[in-house]
Length: 244
Image (cartoon, rainbow, N blue to C red):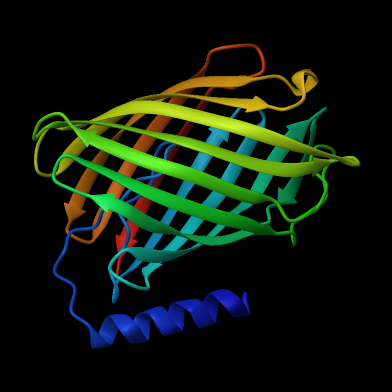
């Protein structure tokens, strides 16, 4: 897309003018979003693949670039949901999501970040969500227990149109991350999505995964989730995060 080309070119130009000496800190994998914001002069490109029953999603792209030391611009595009139903295959394209993160408080012990996003309804229409602007607000946090272990979580809400009715979701997550070596890490997490309409059903998932740093600018990951009720699906995924 032309918009993405312009974004990448501008970010590459900024990156070429400013030096970058920090190791990548990616938001993927996992349901929760990290409190860290990308520094000015850096661009994170994070991509992945996700498989659940009868549905594959790719490329799960997130572009992140620093505007100030505490604020980053985020552009997200899940891409395509490739679905299989009754022996047939079809795909649904996602909306573009744009917004950013702002670090409210930062310390060696804990961090708090605000995140605000909204969709740009350019994707395919489907039977669940009507094309419309869908705002998303979140408070992200983490707390350091030791050099190897941290707690993290999120309290967030989004809304979307279903038929002629606007639905509101409350989303809660709590997890722990572990640094096993300088390159190898893991996490576990539990999250729930509670819609304002009971007939939609509450989703609850336990997930976890592993990350491996190839170098300061490249992180690989693998993750999986276990649905805790009938409405929640199991999934497995993998991805990469690159820093420029």
